[in-house]
Length: 161
Ligand SMILES: [Zn+2]
Image (cartoon, rainbow, N blue to C red; front, side, top):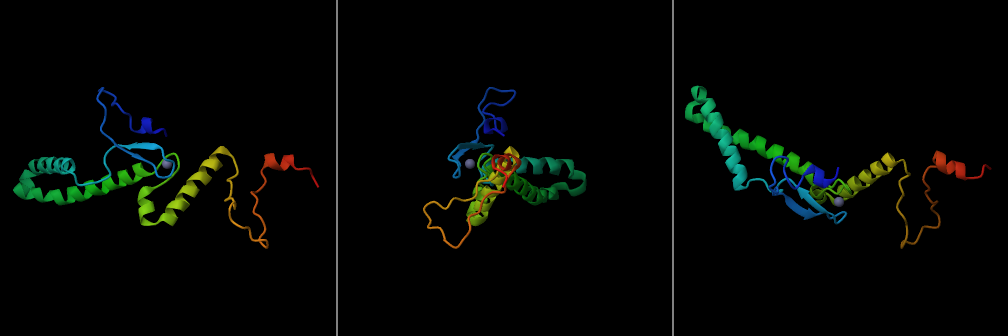
């Protein structure tokens, strides 16, 4: 999906530009925009959870009275879990499949995720995935070269033996 469709610059009902978070993808160097800063725990987030807690306290006043304020803790846990899941999904590049969070944890897994993304893209286009080139590396003379499996199109090009 195109990033401008996912997070449009203008909202559907107002002509005010949405404040997003912009950065450049480390994989494809494309400018990316996500719905909010990746950090959780800003004053804005605290205010959102506090308002929810106040509302819950008022609604549940006959049951818990002022002790309903303790609901801030589970509300915050739910808020942070959902925010992190949404952010984790939003940070993955649609174009190249680069996941910055996974890269910080384990860069080899991040490289495999990018490769899997491109394999899937090639599969969707019906093309064979180009295996890694060995340019600049001295090839092992004993190893046999790896060629992609012949497809219907390529097998028609070969003369039958
Ligand atoms: Zn990218």
